[in-house]
Image (cartoon, rainbow, N blue to C red; front, top):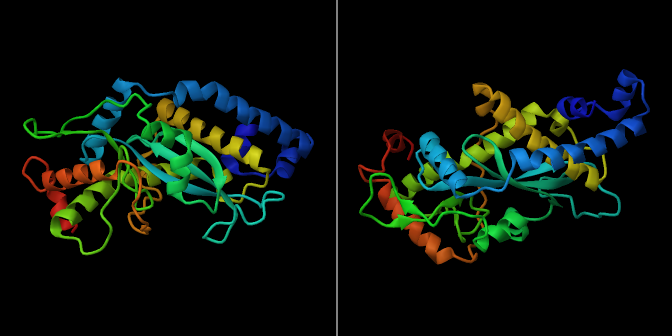
Amino acid sequence: MSVRYLATGASFNSLSFEYLMGASTIRDITKSTCEQIWNILQPLFMAIKQEDDWIKIADEFYTRTNFPNIIGAIDGKHIRMIQPEHSGTSYFNYKKFFSCVLMAWTDADYKFVYIDVGSYGTASDSEIFKTSEMGKRLSENQLNIPSGRHLPNDDDGNVIPFSVVGDEAFGLGNHILRPYAKRNLNYTKRIFNYRHTRARRVVECTFGILANKWRIFHRPIDVNIDFCVRIIKACCVLHNYVRIKDGVKFTDTLYNCPMDNLTIINENNRGRNNMDSVRQYMSSYFITPEGAISCQYDKV
């Protein structure tokens, strides 16, 4: 019954007729079930990663996107909801609807690595990530991430740290690699941005697959904020469960994967200078015979 609610987006009233139970009873059962789904499945299907796990994720990213030393893509997703009581405009976002934010870190296989749920719709992605548990632990090197390795076919070059890719809403920071701002880009920087986008778009694909599978996201979620957070977390861990157990249709991977609509903000995060050096090195690497891919020259 609860999974049906998540999968179809049906209202509690419609489910009450189908299951011959009171709508409030179904609501209470669903709220409790969502909490238990997260508590039981999260340690199994969204567990804390170890060094070997990060290496595997980086290898998969390189295989699928041709971007080396990447251990995830990060982005925020506005989840539509009704206005929470006594919240004023805190959840009213720039898109002109009420929402809370799902901040997600995903791997190349369209699974969630870490999530942060429930931030105000008015908050920026950079602000949410910086204050989230995963953002703090990444900044403080507490996620068991390996120190780095050489880029493919570049054994005599620099050791490059593992990074997560995010759009311009994320400043350069410790382990965070963002594209160059779209101003006065030379050829080398345009190549880097194209390669960066190929890696970054997997998080948008993951959001698309999530919404396509769990249709509760096709309408504003009409519960209080605590219940809404439980729903989102349950759907994310169920997404991983289904992805691991049953795989995903190829057509799902093509769903909702935009490569544009980027927002530029100032860069002021900790670790910016180091990651700028990494970005410059990788930009040069991508135009060498060892680092180039044939399709990049047709895209810039």
